[in-house]
Image 1 (cartoon, rainbow, N blue to C red):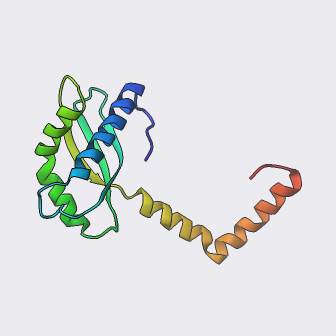
Image 2 (image 1 turned 90 degrees about the vertical axis):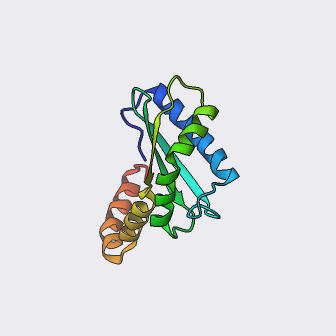
Amino acid sequence: MTNSGQSPRSLRVGEEMRHALARIFEHGLHDPALAGVALTITEVRVSPDLKNATAFVVPLGGSRTAEVMAGLKRAEGYLRRELAQAVKLRYAPALHFTLDTSFEHASQIDALLRRPEVARDLGPVKKARKKTGDAD
């Protein structure tokens, strides 16, 4: 995930919210779709006015993602109240959850770069750089 275009304040608030959500998830949620599921919050993006927040999540193991996302949607109100108590802001931001696909995307790029025809094409570039003394 990239944080381009966000102010330092919204980055700080987003990171504080990420930590607070992680603590809330540690204690567990009562929704059956979320029971026993370990979630990773990779990032929380906050709007410039701090009234909306999008949390990017990854269920560990990648299983039951549709069910987990539906459970998080149902728990948004509860999590917003818990977050308002944990992170002191003037307004509790509206909270939304999105599945973080950046790890899958990175894996696909890595797999493409490891293909023999791509490695063959990249091979001469690396050798040429080493001959000229450029860093990799």
